[in-house]
Every structure is written in structure tokens, then in C-alpha cells.
Amino acid sequence: MSIDLLELADTVVDEPTFIGFLQALARDWKNAEEAEAETPSSPYGPSALGWENWTFGAIIESSAAWAEASSDGLRFYEKPENPWQRVAQILAMGKFYE
Image (tube, rainbow, N blue to C red; front, side, top):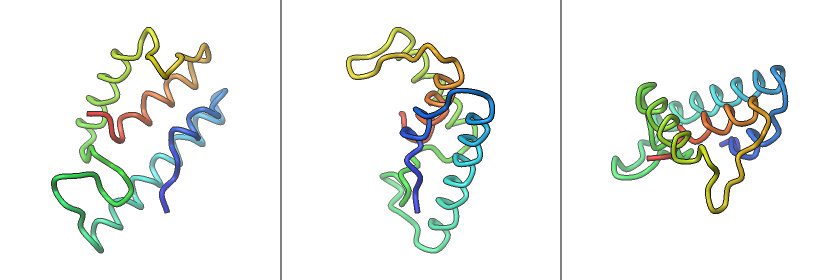
């Protein structure tokens, strides 16, 4: 079962909740790997759990690209003041931002 990482990122307020987010991110990645091993998705779309980016480099690159694009907020995104929450959101976006 996939975790809604964006919703979870919105609940991050401090170091303990950030660590919990990182644990959920890791679990989601592991679950996606296992699901792909059982039933591979099309190479032209996301995995069964929505992962668009499969390597550490691709995830970090996408996270950085989204962080830069959203540094002043976006039309439907208001940048949070809490830095723990912002970092969690940036990492969550690495899952599927291209």
C-alpha cells in the first residue's frame, strides 16, 4: 500500500516528525521495489506506487529542481515557514517531479 507522502510531509513540524517522514519515505520506496519485482509497470509511466524516479541521483535531482521552482511558492503551493516541513515536502516531490 502506498503512503501519501505529500500529506505526511504537511504534518512534519520538528525533528522527530521529520524522522518519521523519512522512515515512511523509505518504506514507500521499498514497497514500490517489491511491487515492481512482482509485477513490473510500463517503462513509460510511473511505478505501481507512483515513483517516477528510481535512482538516488534522479530523486535528489528532481527534489532540487522542485525546490528551486517552488522557492517563492507556486500558484497552488504556499511555502511553509517551518524548515522541517519544507525539507520533507522537497524530498516527497523527488518521488515524482520531473
